[in-house]
Amino acid sequence: MTEDTYTASRPRLIAEVRVNEATLMLGDRHTLVARDLPQTVLERTLRRMDGATTLDRIVLDEPALPREAADELVASLDALGLIDDSALPAFRSGSEVILELEELIEARCETTIYRNPFWRTCLAANAPDELPQRLATGMVIENWHFLFRESYFDAPVLSYVPNTAVRLLLNEFFAEEYGHDEILLRSLAHVGLTYEDMQDAIPLPETMALCNALAYWAHNDPLFFFATLGLLEGQGMKEDSFIEACTRVGMDEAFVGPLRTHANINISACHGNLSRLIYQKIPAITEAEARRLKAQIPLFVDLYDAFYSGVWRHYTADAPLLRRVSEL
Ligand SMILES: [Fe+2]
Ligand SMILES: [Fe+2]
Picture 1 (cartoon, helix red, strand yellow):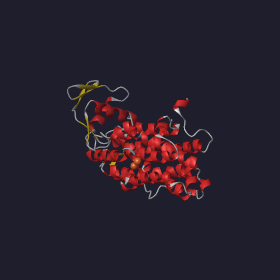
Picture 2 (cartoon, helix red, strand yellow):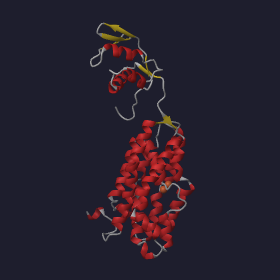
Picture 3 (spheres, helix red, strand yellow):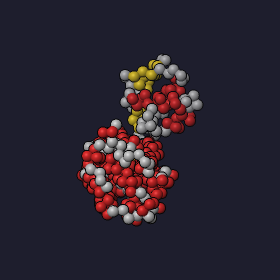
Picture 4 (tube, protein in one colour):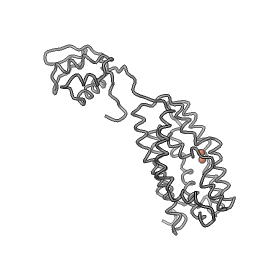
């Protein structure tokens, strides 16, 4: 049974039970033979499936009925269309679930991204030698690769069918994000990199891993993908610590200005708030879905942390700035 299926908690059998010697008849079309259970136990169990009694209660009252056998019985009756569950599955509102997800993301960031040498360097840098231009350029290069590929992971959710309000928000976001790689290209032009150079450049493996994971989630688990947008778009940020650091150490305005332009688009369009806005439009998320969402947070935050570690490793080393396809 997958995590998303649930056993009817108050099953109601919608077929009449009749005893026919060594078998039980369910309505006119189905016959049930008790194999591992005494027939009387099976019959009593079926008769108690009245939509009012919980399966837990039935199992408690029948010592000869193991829990797994009861779940299996309900699941097979359900598959035959013979079970009607009168209870709603446990659920919470999207607004409630996103707050819990945000807390988990924040807690994971505290032990990963917030301790990442790249961010520690940015927060501490005050003088030019404390944030090398090569490292700052590298951060913009990898961000450019990420933004250049943004439609890999934003486009699959544009057609999000389950919720029209969410779909509209995503389409608005897509339009606002479009072409942001070109803003960063202006910073790169100032340090001598052209569009042709960038077309020839290979992203770091960590950058590609993040893009691929997001594309996977956008295709296969849009709800989880929506939960990643807040962190990616700088939730709760008034200013970007990287841009602040570039400014403090006195980098050229021609390099920092376009970065600020990009960050200001995020801030004024409230992109950091996007996960919340989307989840506020989702009236119900089952507990099984919430568990699935929570379980994927460590992987997402760790991939994002690895992105910064990749930037730190490659752009503080002596290797050529760009990993070029033409030099492979
Ligand atoms: Fe952007
Ligand atoms: Fe954005």
